Structures are given as C-alpha cells and as structure tokens.
Image (cartoon, rainbow, N blue to C red; front, top):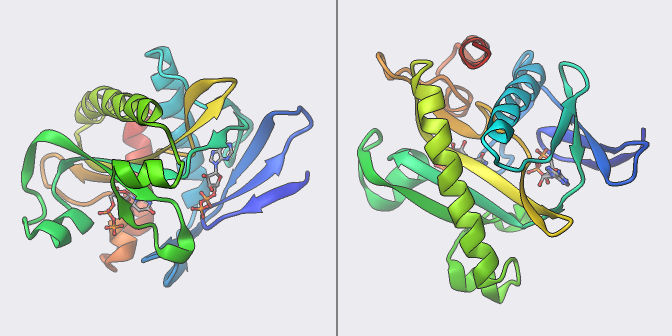
Length: 231
Ligand code: ADP
Ligand code: UDP
C-alpha cells in the first residue's frame, strides 16, 4: 500500500480503488501541539473500533460520513475527502482551553452548546479563528461554514444522548469535515483522543486528558469507553 500521509495519530494509505483511502490508527499519542509524546497501548485499535461504531450509528441517522467499512481492528476504509482545514470544536461543559481563555472553572455547565473554529495548521499551533478569518483564508464560504456549523450542532444533538445512555458525559469534542462529490461529509475520527468524556456519576475523566495531565490509568480509561460504546 502506498503511504500518502503520516500524521500524529494515523497513517493514510491509498487503496486499490481510486477515491478510497485506508486509515491506520497508531498507538502514538501526542499532546500540546506535539511537545508531549508517548504511546498508549492498544489506542489505535480502540480509536478505530470506536470511530467505526459511532460513524455507522451516525450514518443510520442520515449524517454523511467518510466511512465505507472497517477492514480490521486498526484499519478503516474511507472515502477520500477534500478536507476543510478546520477543527470544529463543540462544547457542552467548560474544560481545557475554554477554561483557560474565559476563567470559568472546568465542569461549568453550558446552557447552549458553544462552537469554536480552529485553523488546522501545525506550524501555527492550530489557532482559534473566527468566521471572517475562515473567509480570509478561503477555508469555506459563508454558506459552506453555515452548513458546517449546522451539521456539527446536529451531530452533538445525536451524540449527547448516545453517550448519556452509556453513563458518559460528552464534555466537548473535535470534528473535521470535507467534501465528496459536492456533499459535506464528516471525516477523521471520533475517539477518546478527540473527545472529553467523563463518567456521569463520578465525573472521572475517561479520555486523553489522562495522558495530557499524567493522571494514570490511561489504557484502562480507553478500554472502558470502548466497552460502553460497543453496547
Ligand atoms: P494530524 O494530521 O493532525 O497529525 P492524523 O494523524 O489523525 O492527524 O492524520 C490523519 C489526517 O488525515 C488528518 O490530516 C486528517 O485531516 C486527514 N483525513 C481524515 N479523514 C480523511 C479523509 N476521509 N480524506 C482525506 N483526508 C482525511
Ligand atoms: N481536540 C482535538 N485535537 C486538537 C485539539 C483539541 O481532538 O488538536 C479536542 C480535545 O480532545 C477536546 C476538544 O477538542 O475534546 C477541545 O480541546 P481544547 O480546545 O480544550 O484543547 P486542549 O485542552 O487540548 O488544549
């Protein structure tokens, strides 16, 4: 297989079929824009299986995603999208950089979900940008951005109860979108790497913050999330 791209968490290969890619999920973990590096045992397998499960479930709700089918525990066959250079973050509770930016304590409830746009650019450290910057950088037209916002909020409305039924609070998460034959599609992954997931009862963190903040029990948290998501 021809390796097209190696990122921090995944390798992307060309498949035999034009317009289709194979995404391989790695155990490598990075945080703070690549400054902290490590490995999380079986993370690749957890993230690939969780992404497949959630994307299949979202497609049943008529949300278009890039997923064609999982190939094995670590590899997903996906449509090749023309990616939009944005990280779209949706937040239901204050955590992480929103707490730092606003001074609101982590765990503060948010009445109406907050949507943020980050410019996907490693050299710049993925800065927070606004709608005018999106237009300036030609990342999306105002109409396209409106469609992206609407779809991200819609996905949040589906995912919150999905996790709640499994005893998990969906604190925040990051989405990436792209275009396929004129259609907006959800790409990339949804996993404990890209979401903040807290146990509803104990508010224990079951996500990458355990790695970022050296809280221990990282592998166990990823396995616990996978177990609950697969039910
Ligand atoms: P990063 O690039 O941030 O280090 P990854 O290691 O997860 O991230 O690499 C995966 C790359 O593949 C990302 O750049 C992501 O935008 C891109 N990508 C995800 N899904 C698709 C897709 N369906 N088509 C094309 N590119 C994709
Ligand atoms: N996130 C992500 N990739 C990034 C940055 C953030 O998946 O490059 C996710 C992160 O896991 C969290 C949400 O987006 O679920 C919001 O992250 P935040 O802005 O608080 O960033 P951080 O705390 O990582 O600085």
